[in-house]
Length: 131
Image 1 (spheres, rainbow, N blue to C red):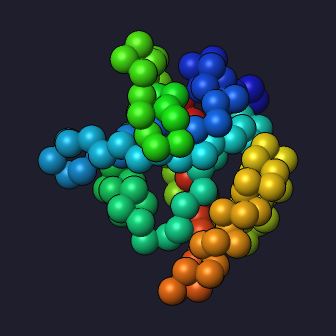
Image 2 (cartoon, rainbow, N blue to C red):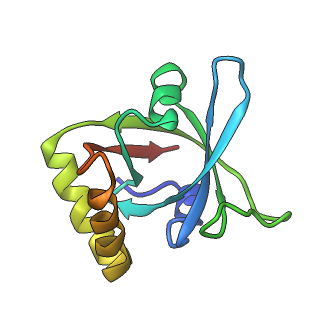
């Protein structure tokens, strides 16, 4: 199976603004790294973040190319999709390989800094994004 054309159009972006939705329907954008993994895009995030909590109630997401800080250009296309929370050791190993291949040293440094935080190493989950 191949990646949906709309998702493929943003697969090579360095950062995207991932919007998840509250129970009220209000969107909450968050800048994230994104990578292609077969017929889906994936995002990695610590379990327990707001976006994971919102996705447990509503699997709709919207993706827009952004910069590292989440700033989206006025003419940036929006891609509607669905996200599934994947919380397995196999998914964590796969996401590690995929993100290391795309972001290289930057990913290693970010993960190292995260481990140094006051709470230590955080359990991460994958968000598998499909059309």
